[in-house]
Amino acid sequence: MTATQINRRQMVQAIGATGALAVAGCLGSSTEGNGAETSEPADEDGLEATKAVDIERIARDPTDVPAPVDWNEPRTHDVTLRTERVTAEIEPGVTFDYMTFEGQVPGPMIRVRQGDTVTLTFDVPEDMNLAMHNVDFHAVYGPGGGADATTIAPDDDPTQIEFRAEYPGVFIYHCAVPAMDYHISSGMFGSILVEPEDGLPEVDNEFYLGQHEIYTAGEVGEEGHHEFDHDAMKREEPTYVIFNGQAYGFTADGVGPMQANTGETARVYFANGGPNLLSSFHPIGNVFSNLYRDGDLLSEPAKNVETTPVAPGTTIAGEMEFPVPGPVKLVDHALSRVVHRGALGVIDVQGEENPDVYDEDP
Image (cartoon, rainbow, N blue to C red; front, side, top):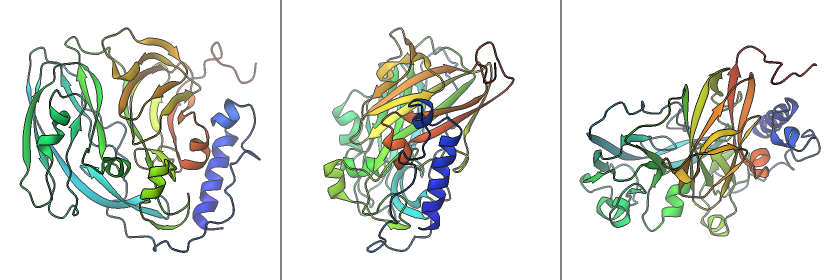
């Protein structure tokens, strides 16, 4: 068994031991004997040696969210999106060639107000790769959501479009060239938030997560450089299902959990880039006290929702309250994706115990 596989097994077992993983917390059993242990060592034949990484962290910081709208009249925003191909680790010892907007997954969140104008400059640098790219905004009226006009090759000059944000909501944007499933799976998606004219309710924390599948020629945890597997993608059989491009990234064994305090509130913007699988997004040990289904910011939010389906090509917004301390696990409740494929993030809630709400030792 490789060091990477041992680390993966120890990490998953540690999650289960806390009682926070859904296998333990929702099914009432430990991960022992329930698939936490990896199978026989993966066959590394056919995989290249691990590549040197271009960046140490592919996962975009989930707190990298623009400040809330505080203006009352329409504005014009100059936004530049550049494509960047980078080699990074899906997990320790496993490298992959990502295609991205601005170097991390997901692409940067764009935040505007209904009625604002966006002047978008789209650039595909010459050293990106040989592929054409573009960007399709689900928040745009226009051919392909802007994709038709932004389709350029690496040797083309940057292109520019302008659009007015006519309808509020939180929406996906993604690459939409003919190989769009390959490009999205490799990391080319993000979210644009169009706030209603009256804005959004104030919260203490905002987090930005993006789920997607990666299809590779290697097995989960198999050390080396993983090439993209187009046949696996056609079969919709991913190697990894992950948040922000990294398996178990927002845990103690990754880049670290998200942070909040008791008594605070949080809004999670959760984008499912796909390209294929529906996500059953669920906060373990919490609920979405307000859920803006399918990115709809105008209808009254649903209340106290345990799990919400998020279709590929959709961003939702879910709000939570934190009356007690402890880890809140954000998962895809298709639980094999949590235990085996990487779909887990943690909000570490710090603060005083609240035995009136939850008492472990009554």
